[in-house]
Image (cartoon, rainbow, N blue to C red; front, side, top):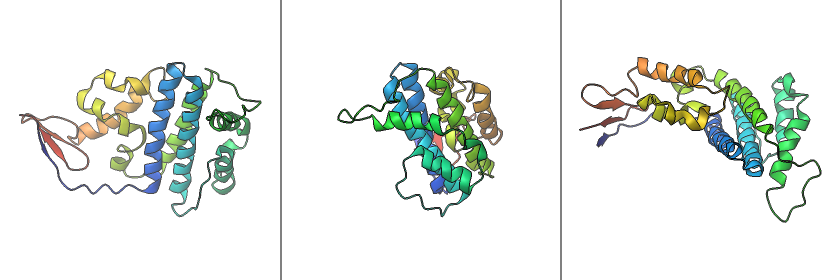
Length: 214
C-alpha cells in the first residue's frame, strides 16, 4: 500500500482533546465490565467521567481554570453552579461511588466503607457518559469536527469497512451508542466521499490524507 499524506489543518481544541481521551477511557471501562473486571472498570469509569466533565466545562468556557481537580463531585458542582446543569444536583451519591472506586486503586489504601463492585454500575457508566458526550457534541457546530470527535474517533475502521465487527467494542450491550448512532457519522463522511475507496483504489480521509491500494 502506498501512503500519500497532505498537511492536516485539524487543530483540536483542549475541549475536544479531553473528549477524545474520555472516549478511550470509557471504552476501556466497558470492556473491563463486560469481562467481569469490576474494580478496574470502576477506576477507568472515573477516568472517563473526569475527562468528559472537564471537556464539557472547557466547551462552555475554554479559559476556565480547573487546575488539578480530580473529584467528580467538584466538577459536578461547577457544571450546575456555573453552567446551569441543574439535573446534576441530585447525583452526588452516584459520583461518590466512582470516587470510592478511584480512591481504592492502591493496595496500601484503606477500603472505603461504601466501596463495592457491582455489575449494575455498567448501566450507569453508559447512561452518565452518554449524557455528557451528547452535551459536548452540542457545542461543536461544524459537522466535520463533530464527526471527527468523541465516539466517532473510535469508529473509523467501521467507516471504511462497513463491517459491524469493527464496532463490537463500542456497541456490545450498549443501548446508547448503537450501530444506528454510529451510522450517522458514517453517512456524513460517505456523502463527502470520505472513508470510501474509489475505482482507482484511493481512499480519502478527513484530514486531507489519502491511501492508494495497488
